[in-house]
Length: 89
Image (cartoon, rainbow, N blue to C red):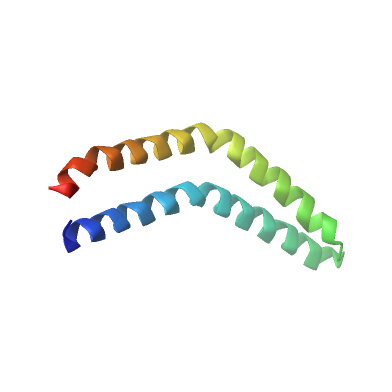
């Protein structure tokens, strides 16, 4: 196993991790910003007002993008297992 192979695998792993986390993180960011803006305009400082919509939105994002996320993870894992013979040589 060469240094180049390790760097390639690490780069691909970080890219896949970023792709898989992006829908959830962007959803939480947008909903959190919207709720914070609403709270600052109305001066309502209720914790559940910020928490519950964010949890619901992240759940919906997981339902929508979950199938794609699973296929991406399976494809990445299959690629890693397919690379094993070339890495050992």
